[in-house]
Length: 201
Image (cartoon, rainbow, N blue to C red; front, side):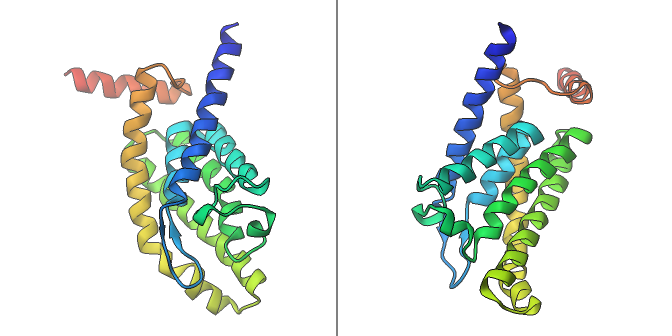
């Protein structure tokens, strides 16, 4: 019974985070070809807070919502055609990004410094997918794809990685304290114990 309750709770959390990604995706700084959006920040938050499994579930749900016609992609767009458009690689790349970011955190520790590393790696995964797909869909050279879909987003990507780390770790601790998230692996429990002891001292 407790297991079913926990599973239902995490399904609700996943749905909420998928919706959050859709909301932040509407925060857009328009550029001529590929706009800067809040999507990547939301992906980093989902992975940092939920970890690899549930963070990836949230991103997959978000991608499916947009694919079936719910306007959750940037500029309230939706549909499979968006996935095959110039920005489609970024959206698909969010899935491995969430998994890899969460996986790194689970194998190290849920702390701001390691979260920054994990989110930075995740940022480059997203950019790699987006650049490769832009090269194919727009039929341009690798040089053009790299200078259009990769280089302009590095600095802002690092800023988002920092924000996702700072906010994500803070929110994760609060959700665990409120028993809305499981504490995770034994290593993560150990890290939490150490941090709690340090705080008390």
